[in-house]
Length: 490
Ligand code: NAD
Image 1: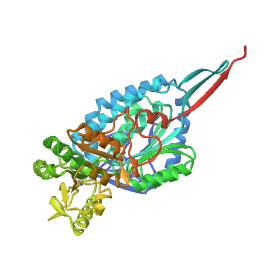
Image 2 (image 1 turned 180 degrees about the horizontal axis):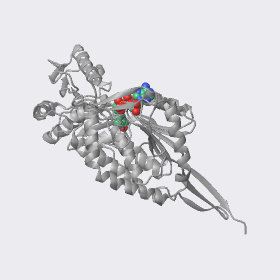
Image 3 (image 1 turned 180 degrees about the vertical axis):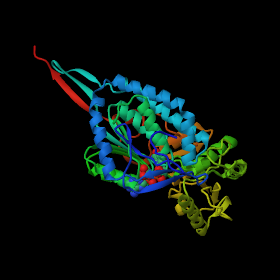
């Protein structure tokens, strides 16, 4: 599959990439990476610790000096080449994502294409890094700002977007002159290995981008490493909070994008078929494992019943299969532990008085990581299913009288990642836009997906930090400014 892993029966043994070379993590525990669709063993991943992190940070620090001193236009050209190489490899990368994550090929391809947009944005770094000038701030005195890289940046990423999320971070950080240590999810490391190789092929000097494979121990070491200047994290809410608190206490700048509970609001004037398509895809695409997945539907009185019928029709017609099967729509969750956790949450909701409209507990569990798309109705307002992130193909449906009531329910959530409204009314959409407490909004769009050149993040418990990912916020996060005031004699 790639040059880095050493081959072994049942999948390669993956290695870290440090200083431009594969480096084994000796003596550490390992984890088996399995295909969630088939259970097939794909690889063995080392669970690196502080020693491996030290090595990677040292390589980043050393190589980072010359990289930061390169003219920005040269760094930008590496991003142009990386964009081309990744675009050429999009099918290979999509296959890797679909294999190790289990999501449908179309989704896998989509996430790589989203990542390409960030590379395209980062290739504009010569203009993005420009400062501002003020002439004569006092008699004969001028002032200006200049942007500089922060140093070594650590990127810690989740399993659900093995391609796109590292690409939210690496292109902007690298083009801005930083060096980078990527610590991808131990559940989906194969795409990360390939991405790092492609960046190397694009001409990134050895050591500027390093890869450390592992889990909690590697993260803990990165968060307190004295030579790591900034941490970009994306993952679940408890870990995001821990990452933010630990790294900030160690004096680092941190952006930690966290978990979600996303509300979809369907008003009576919404177009039924298009709304059903969007809600179906938002709730059940990638088995509900998107941070933007809609997991609660708040539906107005007249659309409520027809929308449920339309959703059931779509579920009944959706083929189940491995992500790598181009016809598959219903794909597995990441592992059996996740499946068990989601089934337990469904059972708990039913015990609290809710009813399954479709899906639900398995009559016969045949193993594997597949779960049926599940719609829960008659859910109590206090039910945990309305408040906790399940990260599975489960949609709780609650009837509401009107938009006011829907907004009020959604705003009670501790999370605020995304929310969508479905309506033909501009006035309703405007009210929603102004009053809903979430960072990413969809208006007749079920998944308000990130765009490389716009900042992207949630609100409230879905985000810890100040500057969001992507776009101008990304550039600001990965740079620090000097304000220079100048007076020349004479
Ligand atoms: P996760 O929090 O389990 O893991 C994320 C990263 O943290 C991984 O690299 C993992 O190795 C590491 N990690 C896990 N436990 C740790 C611990 N105790 N200490 C230190 N590091 C630890 O998340 P996941 O299950 O891989 O991803 C799914 C979660 O990510 C969901 O909650 C989802 O909403 C969230 N997510 C959020 C966004 C967003 O933009 N807000 C985007 C994608 C995913």
